[in-house]
Amino acid sequence: MRRLWIAGLFALGLLLPSGPGAAGAADPAVGELLRLLDHADKRYAQIHDYTAVMVSRERVRDVLQDQERILLKFQRAFKVYMRWMEGPSQGREGLYVSGAHDGRFLIYEPRGFQRLFTAALVPTDARVMEKSRHPVTDVGIGRLLEIVGDNTRRASRNGVLRVVDRGVGEVAGRRVRQVEGILPRDPQAGYYAYRVQLSFDDEHRIPIRVVVFDWSDQLVEDYTYSDLRLNPGLSVLDFDPSNKEYGFSTWRIQVPG
Image 1 (cartoon, rainbow, N blue to C red):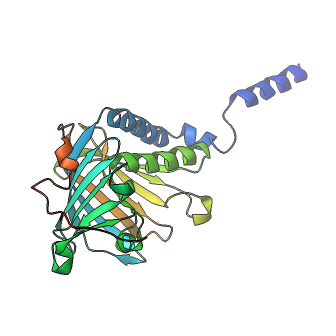
Image 2 (image 1 turned 180 degrees about the horizontal axis):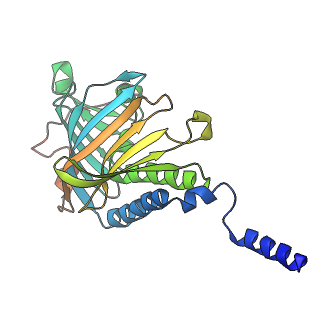
Image 3 (image 1 turned 180 degrees about the vertical axis):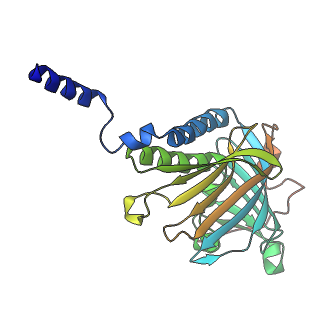
């Protein structure tokens, strides 16, 4: 009888969750965040293009930059047009089309001598990154979902993800579901950040605000997508520097870098 009892316990031990991923998998809040991310991935797969006003604030070299409002046009596979509407760079325009313009990020500045030409820089040029945490190739909701999804799912598998459900709220006049993911407070653990606050649009089912904190619990990134229009049918002209609505100069200078 005792042998049967021990054998039963052993079998139960094989069936019950164990190991580092067990706690995360059993936590309903973790499961809910993973569900929201899965739904967001499926919804984003149906989006060919979109326009939005991106409200952005970043900490660069330990300095919290001023908030900026940027008109954004995006189309798959990767085409992006940006116009800075408010902030220190007001009036600037940027255009990046994957596979075009020798892989360069086109930038037009409306002030001073720079207004006479369009600068063509590599996306990771030091002059671009001086005031930004990300190159233009990271811009947009799709890349945001990749970064957040990868870190969240990996932390869940490793049993180190904690999730706080912040309930229903409002962002940019939209009803959202708010969730916070908390990762190991250790930069050596290999995760992107310590905390991330996500606001999923109830109707569109994609995140329209992401707030990121580093391992010192400092705000490092805050992005909000307002006035979001999905699949508006953007044309080739929307990503053409010769568009008469844009300010790009025909005189182009390719900046070494």
